[in-house]
Image (cartoon, rainbow, N blue to C red; front, side):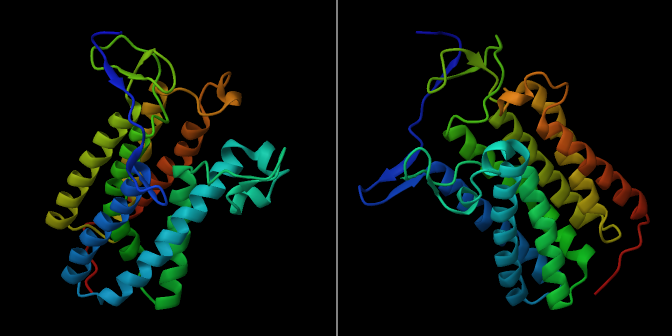
Length: 272
């Protein structure tokens, strides 16, 4: 038995009734949307926006997140497989070598982020809402959602960190007996900190619409770029890469955020 490290071996299931099993990842995924909805309810009331619009926005963002995250994984991380098995992108089954149910395995946060942005653009066009205003509001809760998702990854013992000798190392028993960085926990703590910081700043120091959206992009993906150095590679082809896929995808989003911050740096606040 290894000592001086945390032995991590949860089974990933909150409750199993035989005919139904609730997994921690699913629970945290739901909490991500519930927590975000509650925060946005307060924000919409503050800005005098009808809550019916928030209900519609939630549907758009939920679908954008799932579709974007799924396509992101299939295109960015496993294109060689899914280009030959396109039906498995949208169906939770595999036809090779024999038909069997697999569930949806693989969601990419960068794809989810792109999906959220596109869903907001569609929403604003349909309901004639100010795009930068909605982007700002959703940006406030994205770090909170990321916090819950990474806790789900931790409970699943996935997206593990590199080997280390730090005293708080985790041994992910399902993977091996090597002490590793709890990278999922690092990210969860960072995302929660960003949420608390941005939520406080946005409510106390209003900026021109779009500013906080840009700031969230810069903070989230800058930390994501850095923390990837502590993670194991997600796919085999990343082994010889200087920067992995997650880091390469983070760079344009950081630059995009910096451009938005520059363009929106004026303190003028547009009122409804």
